[in-house]
Image (cartoon, rainbow, N blue to C red; front, side, top):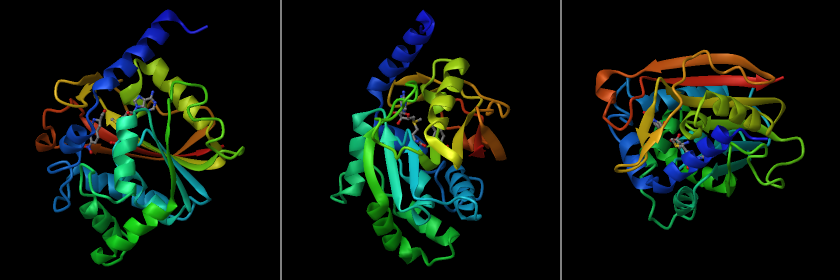
Length: 269
Ligand SMILES: C[S@@+](CC[C@H](N)C(=O)[O-])C[C@H]1O[C@@H](n2cnc3c(N)ncnc32)[C@H](O)[C@@H]1O
Ligand SMILES: O=[N+]([O-])c1ccc2c(c1)CN[C@@H](CO)C2
Protein backbone atom coordinates (compact mmCIF):
# COMPACT_ATOMS: atom_id res chain seq x y z
CA UNK A 1 0.00 0.00 0.00
CA UNK A 2 1.49 3.37 -1.00
CA UNK A 3 2.18 5.63 1.98
CA UNK A 4 -0.13 8.69 1.94
CA UNK A 5 2.88 11.02 1.66
CA UNK A 6 4.24 9.12 -1.35
CA UNK A 7 0.99 9.31 -3.32
CA UNK A 8 0.56 13.03 -2.56
CA UNK A 9 4.23 13.68 -3.35
CA UNK A 10 4.03 12.08 -6.79
CA UNK A 11 0.66 13.69 -7.52
CA UNK A 12 2.05 17.07 -6.43
CA UNK A 13 5.00 16.66 -8.83
CA UNK A 14 2.62 15.84 -11.69
CA UNK A 15 0.66 18.99 -10.84
CA UNK A 16 3.87 21.09 -10.96
CA UNK A 17 4.54 19.82 -14.47
CA UNK A 18 1.20 21.04 -15.81
CA UNK A 19 2.80 24.46 -16.22
CA UNK A 20 5.95 23.18 -17.95
CA UNK A 21 6.80 25.34 -20.99
CA UNK A 22 9.01 23.60 -23.56
CA UNK A 23 10.02 26.82 -25.35
CA UNK A 24 11.06 28.52 -22.12
CA UNK A 25 12.86 25.41 -20.87
CA UNK A 26 14.84 25.19 -24.10
CA UNK A 27 15.68 28.89 -23.89
CA UNK A 28 16.86 28.57 -20.26
CA UNK A 29 19.08 25.55 -20.73
CA UNK A 30 19.88 24.95 -24.40
CA UNK A 31 21.03 28.35 -25.64
CA UNK A 32 24.26 30.19 -24.64
CA UNK A 33 25.92 30.33 -22.20
CA UNK A 34 24.87 26.79 -21.20
CA UNK A 35 24.95 25.69 -24.84
CA UNK A 36 27.92 27.59 -26.26
CA UNK A 37 29.87 25.39 -28.66
CA UNK A 38 32.74 27.87 -28.75
CA UNK A 39 33.36 27.56 -24.99
CA UNK A 40 35.33 24.61 -23.60
CA UNK A 41 33.61 25.04 -20.20
CA UNK A 42 30.02 25.21 -21.46
CA UNK A 43 27.70 22.54 -20.04
CA UNK A 44 26.11 21.19 -23.20
CA UNK A 45 29.40 20.44 -25.03
CA UNK A 46 30.50 18.58 -21.88
CA UNK A 47 27.32 16.49 -21.93
CA UNK A 48 27.70 15.75 -25.66
CA UNK A 49 31.32 14.66 -25.13
CA UNK A 50 30.28 12.26 -22.32
CA UNK A 51 27.55 10.75 -24.50
CA UNK A 52 29.81 10.50 -27.57
CA UNK A 53 32.47 8.62 -25.59
CA UNK A 54 29.91 6.35 -23.92
CA UNK A 55 28.28 5.31 -27.20
CA UNK A 56 31.52 4.89 -29.19
CA UNK A 57 33.92 3.10 -26.81
CA UNK A 58 32.80 -0.28 -28.05
CA UNK A 59 30.82 -1.94 -25.23
CA UNK A 60 27.39 -0.40 -25.98
CA UNK A 61 25.55 -2.30 -28.69
CA UNK A 62 22.17 -3.72 -29.69
CA UNK A 63 18.95 -2.87 -31.42
CA UNK A 64 16.88 -0.57 -29.20
CA UNK A 65 17.85 2.61 -27.34
CA UNK A 66 15.18 4.16 -25.08
CA UNK A 67 15.38 7.75 -23.78
CA UNK A 68 13.43 8.15 -20.53
CA UNK A 69 11.92 11.60 -19.93
CA UNK A 70 13.13 13.09 -23.23
CA UNK A 71 11.39 16.40 -22.63
CA UNK A 72 11.62 18.72 -25.66
CA UNK A 73 15.27 17.83 -26.32
CA UNK A 74 17.13 15.61 -28.78
CA UNK A 75 20.78 16.09 -27.79
CA UNK A 76 20.73 12.95 -25.67
CA UNK A 77 20.37 10.62 -28.72
CA UNK A 78 22.60 12.38 -31.30
CA UNK A 79 25.45 9.91 -30.70
CA UNK A 80 23.28 6.89 -29.90
CA UNK A 81 21.38 7.18 -33.21
CA UNK A 82 24.55 6.02 -35.01
CA UNK A 83 24.77 2.86 -32.86
CA UNK A 84 21.14 1.73 -32.57
CA UNK A 85 18.69 1.21 -35.39
CA UNK A 86 15.69 1.84 -33.14
CA UNK A 87 15.36 4.85 -30.81
CA UNK A 88 12.28 5.29 -28.63
CA UNK A 89 11.69 8.78 -27.19
CA UNK A 90 9.41 9.15 -24.17
CA UNK A 91 7.91 11.88 -22.03
CA UNK A 92 5.25 12.45 -19.38
CA UNK A 93 3.77 15.53 -21.09
CA UNK A 94 1.98 15.74 -24.43
CA UNK A 95 3.43 19.25 -24.97
CA UNK A 96 6.93 17.72 -24.99
CA UNK A 97 5.97 14.75 -27.16
CA UNK A 98 4.41 17.28 -29.57
CA UNK A 99 7.62 19.37 -29.59
CA UNK A 100 9.63 16.27 -30.53
CA UNK A 101 7.12 15.25 -33.22
CA UNK A 102 7.45 18.77 -34.66
CA UNK A 103 11.16 18.17 -35.24
CA UNK A 104 10.62 14.62 -36.45
CA UNK A 105 8.10 15.74 -39.09
CA UNK A 106 10.51 18.50 -40.20
CA UNK A 107 7.72 20.97 -40.91
CA UNK A 108 9.26 23.81 -38.87
CA UNK A 109 7.49 24.84 -35.68
CA UNK A 110 9.95 23.46 -33.16
CA UNK A 111 11.32 25.85 -30.56
CA UNK A 112 15.03 25.24 -30.99
CA UNK A 113 17.33 24.93 -34.01
CA UNK A 114 19.22 21.67 -33.40
CA UNK A 115 21.63 22.29 -36.28
CA UNK A 116 24.57 23.47 -34.07
CA UNK A 117 24.09 20.36 -31.92
CA UNK A 118 24.10 18.06 -34.97
CA UNK A 119 27.17 19.84 -36.34
CA UNK A 120 29.00 19.59 -33.01
CA UNK A 121 28.38 15.85 -32.67
CA UNK A 122 29.50 15.33 -36.30
CA UNK A 123 32.75 17.07 -35.36
CA UNK A 124 33.15 14.75 -32.33
CA UNK A 125 32.72 11.85 -34.77
CA UNK A 126 35.47 13.18 -37.02
CA UNK A 127 32.98 14.06 -39.74
CA UNK A 128 32.74 17.38 -41.56
CA UNK A 129 30.14 19.63 -39.89
CA UNK A 130 28.13 19.69 -43.15
CA UNK A 131 27.34 16.01 -42.50
CA UNK A 132 24.76 17.32 -40.01
CA UNK A 133 22.05 16.85 -42.64
CA UNK A 134 22.95 13.15 -42.87
CA UNK A 135 22.84 12.85 -39.08
CA UNK A 136 19.44 14.56 -38.98
CA UNK A 137 18.16 12.13 -41.62
CA UNK A 138 19.64 9.19 -39.67
CA UNK A 139 17.94 10.33 -36.47
CA UNK A 140 14.59 10.78 -38.22
CA UNK A 141 15.02 7.30 -39.68
CA UNK A 142 15.78 5.48 -36.40
CA UNK A 143 13.22 7.20 -34.10
CA UNK A 144 10.48 4.58 -34.04
CA UNK A 145 8.01 6.36 -31.73
CA UNK A 146 7.45 9.08 -29.11
CA UNK A 147 5.42 7.65 -26.24
CA UNK A 148 4.14 8.46 -22.73
CA UNK A 149 6.22 7.49 -19.69
CA UNK A 150 5.81 7.70 -15.89
CA UNK A 151 8.87 6.61 -13.91
CA UNK A 152 6.80 6.36 -10.70
CA UNK A 153 4.86 3.43 -12.10
CA UNK A 154 6.38 -0.03 -11.64
CA UNK A 155 5.93 -0.33 -15.42
CA UNK A 156 6.87 3.17 -16.67
CA UNK A 157 5.94 2.40 -20.31
CA UNK A 158 2.99 0.69 -21.94
CA UNK A 159 3.45 -3.07 -21.68
CA UNK A 160 3.81 -3.45 -25.47
CA UNK A 161 6.35 -0.62 -25.82
CA UNK A 162 9.42 -2.88 -25.45
CA UNK A 163 10.40 -6.40 -26.53
CA UNK A 164 10.06 -8.98 -23.72
CA UNK A 165 13.83 -8.98 -22.96
CA UNK A 166 13.81 -5.18 -22.54
CA UNK A 167 15.81 -2.36 -24.09
CA UNK A 168 19.48 -2.78 -25.01
CA UNK A 169 20.36 0.69 -23.70
CA UNK A 170 18.59 3.38 -21.66
CA UNK A 171 19.51 7.03 -21.54
CA UNK A 172 17.83 9.45 -19.14
CA UNK A 173 18.83 13.06 -18.57
CA UNK A 174 17.70 15.41 -15.78
CA UNK A 175 14.60 13.30 -15.24
CA UNK A 176 14.51 11.15 -12.10
CA UNK A 177 15.70 13.82 -9.63
CA UNK A 178 13.51 16.46 -11.31
CA UNK A 179 10.27 14.49 -11.13
CA UNK A 180 10.58 12.80 -7.72
CA UNK A 181 9.22 14.31 -4.48
CA UNK A 182 12.03 12.83 -2.36
CA UNK A 183 15.08 10.56 -2.44
CA UNK A 184 13.04 7.42 -1.70
CA UNK A 185 10.86 8.10 -4.76
CA UNK A 186 14.00 8.79 -6.82
CA UNK A 187 15.46 5.43 -5.80
CA UNK A 188 12.18 3.61 -6.53
CA UNK A 189 12.00 5.29 -9.96
CA UNK A 190 15.59 4.24 -10.70
CA UNK A 191 14.52 0.68 -9.93
CA UNK A 192 11.47 1.00 -12.22
CA UNK A 193 13.53 2.15 -15.21
CA UNK A 194 16.29 -0.36 -14.44
CA UNK A 195 13.74 -3.11 -15.01
CA UNK A 196 13.18 -1.81 -18.58
CA UNK A 197 16.77 -2.76 -19.41
CA UNK A 198 17.93 -6.22 -20.49
CA UNK A 199 20.64 -7.98 -18.50
CA UNK A 200 23.97 -6.79 -19.94
CA UNK A 201 22.33 -3.59 -21.20
CA UNK A 202 23.75 -0.15 -20.39
CA UNK A 203 22.21 2.76 -18.49
CA UNK A 204 23.48 6.29 -19.22
CA UNK A 205 22.29 8.91 -16.76
CA UNK A 206 22.91 12.64 -16.81
CA UNK A 207 21.54 14.76 -14.02
CA UNK A 208 21.74 17.60 -11.55
CA UNK A 209 23.89 17.65 -8.43
CA UNK A 210 22.92 19.79 -5.46
CA UNK A 211 19.83 21.17 -7.14
CA UNK A 212 16.68 21.88 -5.10
CA UNK A 213 14.55 23.61 -7.73
CA UNK A 214 14.42 24.74 -11.32
CA UNK A 215 12.08 26.87 -13.45
CA UNK A 216 10.21 24.85 -16.08
CA UNK A 217 8.75 28.07 -17.43
CA UNK A 218 8.07 31.64 -16.26
CA UNK A 219 6.99 31.30 -12.63
CA UNK A 220 6.89 27.47 -12.90
CA UNK A 221 9.12 26.52 -9.99
CA UNK A 222 9.67 22.76 -9.82
CA UNK A 223 11.25 21.11 -6.75
CA UNK A 224 14.22 18.81 -7.34
CA UNK A 225 15.77 16.11 -5.13
CA UNK A 226 19.27 17.39 -4.27
CA UNK A 227 21.68 14.60 -5.20
CA UNK A 228 25.33 14.01 -4.47
CA UNK A 229 27.65 11.72 -6.39
CA UNK A 230 27.07 8.79 -4.06
CA UNK A 231 23.40 8.09 -4.81
CA UNK A 232 23.46 5.88 -7.86
CA UNK A 233 23.46 2.35 -6.54
CA UNK A 234 20.51 0.73 -8.24
CA UNK A 235 19.48 -2.91 -7.99
CA UNK A 236 21.72 -4.94 -10.32
CA UNK A 237 23.22 -1.72 -11.75
CA UNK A 238 27.03 -1.84 -11.75
CA UNK A 239 28.71 1.58 -12.06
CA UNK A 240 31.26 1.71 -14.91
CA UNK A 241 32.04 5.42 -14.85
CA UNK A 242 30.97 8.60 -13.03
CA UNK A 243 32.02 12.02 -14.33
CA UNK A 244 31.19 15.34 -12.68
CA UNK A 245 31.00 18.85 -14.12
CA UNK A 246 31.04 21.80 -11.69
CA UNK A 247 29.25 24.91 -12.93
CA UNK A 248 31.38 28.03 -13.33
CA UNK A 249 29.71 31.15 -11.95
CA UNK A 250 28.53 32.42 -15.33
CA UNK A 251 26.68 29.17 -16.04
CA UNK A 252 24.48 29.97 -13.02
CA UNK A 253 21.84 31.97 -14.87
CA UNK A 254 19.00 32.14 -12.34
CA UNK A 255 16.80 29.35 -13.76
CA UNK A 256 17.78 26.83 -11.06
CA UNK A 257 20.25 26.35 -8.21
CA UNK A 258 22.15 23.45 -9.77
CA UNK A 259 25.80 23.31 -8.69
CA UNK A 260 27.04 20.39 -10.77
CA UNK A 261 26.11 17.86 -13.42
CA UNK A 262 26.84 14.13 -13.24
CA UNK A 263 27.30 11.59 -16.00
CA UNK A 264 26.89 7.93 -15.06
CA UNK A 265 27.51 4.87 -17.24
CA UNK A 266 26.34 1.62 -15.68
CA UNK A 267 25.67 -1.94 -16.81
CA UNK A 268 22.82 -4.15 -15.63
CA UNK A 269 24.25 -7.36 -14.17
C1 LIG B 1 14.15 18.58 -16.48
S1 LIG B 1 13.20 17.86 -17.78
C2 LIG B 1 14.49 16.92 -18.68
C3 LIG B 1 14.30 16.99 -20.15
C4 LIG B 1 15.44 16.44 -21.00
N1 LIG B 1 15.65 14.99 -20.78
C5 LIG B 1 16.76 17.18 -20.78
O1 LIG B 1 17.79 16.50 -20.70
O2 LIG B 1 16.75 18.38 -20.73
C6 LIG B 1 12.33 16.58 -16.95
C7 LIG B 1 11.37 15.85 -17.84
O3 LIG B 1 10.72 14.81 -17.10
C8 LIG B 1 9.35 14.74 -17.53
N2 LIG B 1 8.54 14.12 -16.46
C9 LIG B 1 7.77 14.74 -15.53
N3 LIG B 1 7.19 13.83 -14.73
C10 LIG B 1 7.62 12.60 -15.15
C11 LIG B 1 7.37 11.28 -14.73
N4 LIG B 1 6.57 11.01 -13.69
N5 LIG B 1 7.98 10.26 -15.41
C12 LIG B 1 8.79 10.52 -16.47
N6 LIG B 1 9.07 11.78 -16.92
C13 LIG B 1 8.47 12.79 -16.25
C14 LIG B 1 8.96 16.16 -17.82
O4 LIG B 1 7.83 16.21 -18.70
C15 LIG B 1 10.25 16.71 -18.43
O5 LIG B 1 10.26 16.56 -19.83
O1 LIG C 1 23.05 23.17 -18.05
N1 LIG C 1 22.36 22.31 -18.64
O2 LIG C 1 22.67 21.77 -19.72
C1 LIG C 1 21.14 21.91 -18.01
C2 LIG C 1 20.18 21.27 -18.77
C3 LIG C 1 18.99 20.88 -18.17
C4 LIG C 1 18.77 21.13 -16.83
C5 LIG C 1 19.75 21.77 -16.05
C6 LIG C 1 20.95 22.16 -16.66
C7 LIG C 1 19.56 22.01 -14.61
N2 LIG C 1 18.18 21.84 -14.18
C8 LIG C 1 17.59 20.62 -14.74
C9 LIG C 1 16.22 20.37 -14.16
O3 LIG C 1 16.39 19.76 -12.93
C10 LIG C 1 17.48 20.71 -16.23
